[in-house]
Length: 277
Ligand SMILES: [Zn+2]
Image (cartoon, rainbow, N blue to C red; front, side, top):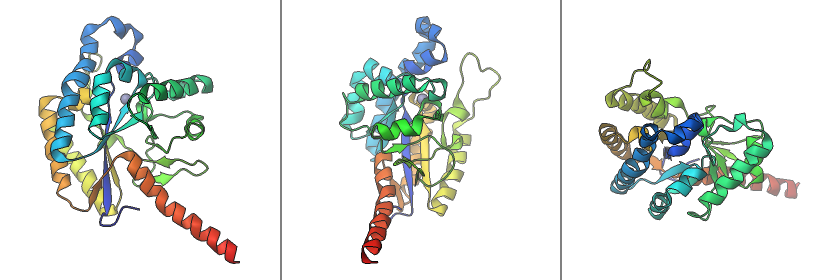
């Protein structure tokens, strides 16, 4: 599945999630500057540092962005695209598609695409807010020309969806920063993990997925991972993985293309054998 010389892959995915996250949690947050300051921190303080870090490490990433946040922070989207990272669809708002009727979900897809096309020629991937899909999502993604979805937790290697011309780039909570670090004014019953604990957990998963020849899909959110101590951990963690020469660091779109390649070869072979028989 992986390009020659590589035995596993790592996709660094950055769910940009600025104001749209908090507005989807509660529309009344629109008039709560304290709540929204977390979003602004992610966009204006954390993203520039993450981009500099990725330059230092020479790691390409995929940024999943809500259309509303793209319109809110155009200069940040220009920097993301300008530095060679992929931009993927993350809804127009940050509302989960399983809460929407088909028409509404399709309108969200279309308006999100229109917002992102200002910054990139091609939007080939979709990650839903909350990694949740509706019964219509895969059909809509295929109809709108997407190459891949990055939402499901049913594998550690990417695969082509049965019945849909769509690659799945699988994810998991363990390789996401939010379950370990998320904290807000309504979650005093939660314990924030230390960066050391999270680095240990990510390290265990990464080593085992590497040994199995799979894909490490690491998911981070600027307003969560962007705290100074956590950014230091992220850089150390990525630099450590980078030392393993046979792990392919790739954007999700490149991974989706690599997955389709063997499928195409198989299809061509079977066409050839039919022609011969
Ligand atoms: Zn999100």
